[in-house]
Length: 573
Image 1 (tube, helix red, strand yellow):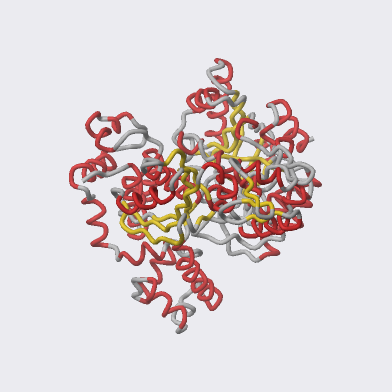
Image 2: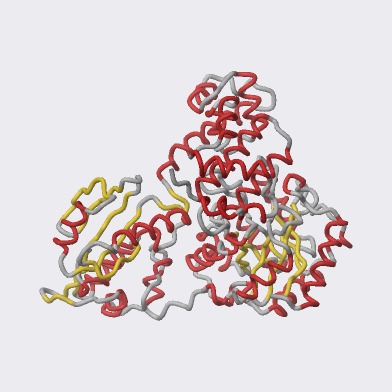
């Protein structure tokens, strides 16, 4: 049985969750969580790691984790996880996916009510038993019911990074069909929606009949539902499914626009075409009865008197009107001068400082901002004052030896319940910049949480607000906030707000990014990287920035290092 890297990561995360529910040692739990992160960034296949002894060389991958990987490679299953599953009801692990239910509450529910599954939990929330537990109450029971509903609702969605990976694999498979000259990912993935329901691929071929016929006979294709002569819904043996659209080269532009969407953008585009004497359908552009060749998308927009609208903007939010005079140049990854929000082995990351500097220079960055967790975040190895000073010395030595990108001294400081940052002012003043983030007490109401964040912004050391709304996609709802007040205060104080590029966060939401930018707020794109693979998160952050209409001038870390530091220093002056 072949086991891939993703399977190993899933098993390690499941082991950590089971250990949490058993109440095991926190260091053991953290070791499996960090092991999963480290392994997620490895190249190659697990069988190669075992054969070559690769895992022996990795920091934090001890004998227990190596044993799990060996079991998976040799037997296709983990005896450690099997044993834990015997000890922990599987429904309890699923309950951890419900927003607002941590390990302590799930254990309490299990011990007091003998509830072992999500359906049993739902029944307890509805009949009043859950509300009667100490520390719960009617409000918690209502939140649990909402969380269960959301868990079911989101089962049909994929996170963007998973959808991209799946789409690219499908594209590679479909590109091998006889007669296909090009395969292009379309739909919600191409528009870079943070959550993706449906996948779509456009195939370019002279004969759609030949392609669709061969599609049903292609290895790995389990079912084909023909929607019309050019479209089919395809399901693969591995469970993946997508809509496939076949077009000749002359129609590619019109077909690709239609397959990309979104619905509101298409409706506005069709109306504009009609007002100019054209007919735009999902198959072609016509001028009266005359076919108009559209070999690319630009040809369609040009015929309608419009600038080419980037796929990320095609949401029906004013892009057609702007395209009449010209779409601004949106941010690209190449515009970023610095990579900020990175965690090292001082807290819960896997980087040594010098290695991070070298990797970032090789990737073309001028500077990198190290921002490990502050001391109040003990659960992820938050830094004490002694840790901070040791890290500063290492950063100075790294910069003195010029081994890579310039390393900036930062911290991701917890915003405490009263808005304080958890470090004395004289220590905070020693950082080049500070990211302030909420990591606990998510149950505060709208007014309390808003005041908490406003108070943090008033501290002169704060440069950037991290993952402002606290959402975890498909897992945790944003906490309630008065974003208008926060944006106004951020613009007034000169505090940037982060687009956290972790694909499970993508926070700010791109809709709020545009609102913040219009309010005069500077935006930072933060990788929130804990491993080499995490550095690539920045692509998702850039995608959200583009969906929020951001140009390079709107983004703090698109500035050179001197301007970035000047922005940070201005706060403390």
